Image (cartoon, rainbow, N blue to C red; front, side):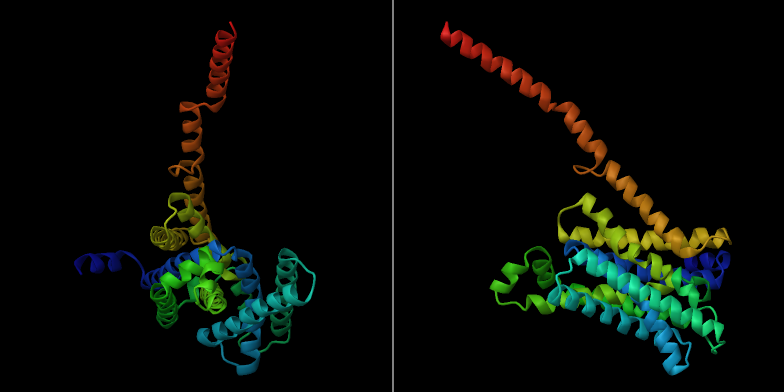
Amino acid sequence: MIHMTVLAAFIPYNTLVVAAGVAAVGCAAGVIGTFGVLRKRALVGDAAAHATLVGVASALLLTGQRDLAVLLVGGLISAMVAIALLVLIRKFTRTRDDAAIAIVLSVSFGIGITLISGMVSRGIPGSGGLERFLLGHTASLTAHDATLLGAVSAISVLCVVVGLKEATMVAFDPDFATAAGWPAATIDFVLVALVAVMVVVGLPAAGAVLVTALVVIPPAVARQWTERIVPMLVIAGVVGLISALSGVMISSLAVQLPTGPIVVLVATSFLIFSVFLAPCRGIVWRTRSTCVFPSDSYDENNTETTADTVTERKS
């Protein structure tokens, strides 16, 4: 308690509010994004993120309210519509997955930018500043907004904890899950929906352009360090949490730096470190293993020994 009082004395209240909200989103995005990465649905989250602008603008047009909860609900609806369009395009056309994602992403993003620009040019009340959803707007977060983000993040993580066994089975072997009688399609849909929820909740923190990084980079870091699902979830959550807190603190010290991009850059530094130094999978580790056990030298020595043995037998 004393430590919290001392901390609050040196850190502005608004910074603490922003840190709490962004940290909750970063941690939950790392945990939820783990299943998206394992199911190879990272680009689906990117398409959903770019589609959220349509929902945000539409929610303001229909309700006339600038409340964050209303805007995020609109963003979630448009994100789910984008995911549904991906499924329909893939099912009823001959378009490949990557092309379908590119189509939905670019078209929805274009519609969102057009709506927001048109609302600002016509002077619609409350439309000013909506473009900040592109790169995030943590500076304007209130205590109510931070509580909302934290509550949604906690509920999302709780859903994963409750259905961890089922989610793990569908993530690694959906065919076996279906054969075992589990509703694999429903579980897969819930996992994708949770990714969409975290993408929408992460809009104030990183914006539509960068929010996918919160869902993808922490799991990618965790994947370098472990092959077990529970440690992977923990590492991804911790990386997301530390990245979020570091980004908020750095941006609060350097006024001209936005929080969202800094959070992404901090997470990227974790990824670079892991790619080089993670045990067993890191580049340095594999290079050292190759030097200690050079396969070429072994093959040459083995070939020479075999040749000598054959020669001795012939003689």
